Each structure stands twice: as structure tokens, then as C-alpha cells.
Image 1 (cartoon, rainbow, N blue to C red):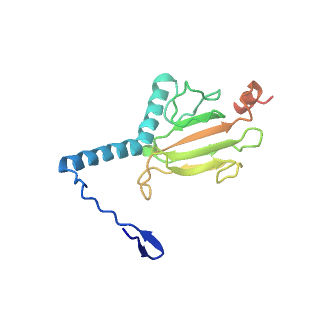
Image 2 (image 1 turned 30 degrees about the vertical axis):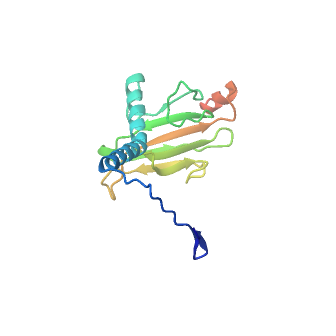
Image 3 (image 1 turned 45 degrees about the horizontal axis):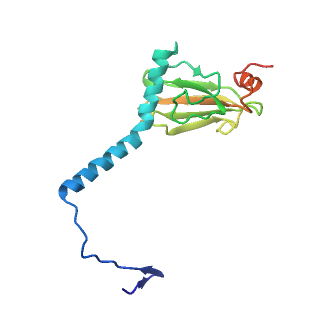
Length: 180
């Protein structure tokens, strides 16, 4: 078989006399399998967010709208979807159906940076805060508007991390906001 040169690309046409055409049942099964995989991929962040909210409500005294944090670096015991073992996590879940939420976030510094990701239940970013965010570490007030306020927005939550210099007790203490 000779290659066909088209637009500088060599194309090869390969014909097989043994090619099989999938049955309609095979095509239907493949389509259902693809849709199941897509549902898991697209739904995992929302399901995980709801699981974290549920665990907070049943295992801690925390409530929606309050800030919860882990006072030590995460390890395999914490089943967070994408944990960073070099960070202290602060997390709060908001319900904006009753109106806007104002986040008044503190400044960060190089002794233990403050970085926050304000995201939707689908973990789609609304804004970043802290040293790597829009405030460049100066802190600031962020307004989260409820769905339907203007262009509908999904409910959001805020994940804040205090990055550690090391896992040593002194740096964990500083990361928890205790001055030495």
C-alpha cells in the first residue's frame, strides 16, 4: 500500500476484510459505560464536598457558616479527596440561600502563608485569596452572592490552608496562629 501525501502529512489507508461491526447491544452497552464513567468524573467533587459537610455536621460541633480546621498536617487517616500534607486546613461551608456572605480574610506572611480557594460545590474556583490570590497576601473582604442575585452562581464554600515551613512542632504551632 502506498502512502497518500496530503498537505505535508503522510496518510495510510488500512482496509481490513475482517473488520467487525459492533451490534446495537454492544454500542448501547459501551454508551452506558461511558456515561457512567462521566457521571463519576463530574460528580465526584460534589459528592465529596457533601460528604465533608456531612462529616463535619455529625463528627464535630461545627455548623454551616462556621470555620473548622485541622490543627495538625493531614495524613492517610484524613480521607480528604486531595489533601496536602504540608498545610493546615481551614474549611467552612456556606448556604447563600439566605443572602450574601462576606469573608473577611486575614493577611498572610512568609512565616506561614495564608492561601484560600473560594470554590463552588463542583470545586470550580470563584476566587483565590492569600499570598497567591487576588489580594496578594494583604487580606481583604470577599463577597459571595447567592444564586440568582445576578447570573446564577452555584453555592460555594471556602477552603483555607496555612502552609507550613516544616512538620516540626514549632512550625505547626505557628501555623495554628500561636505566636512564639
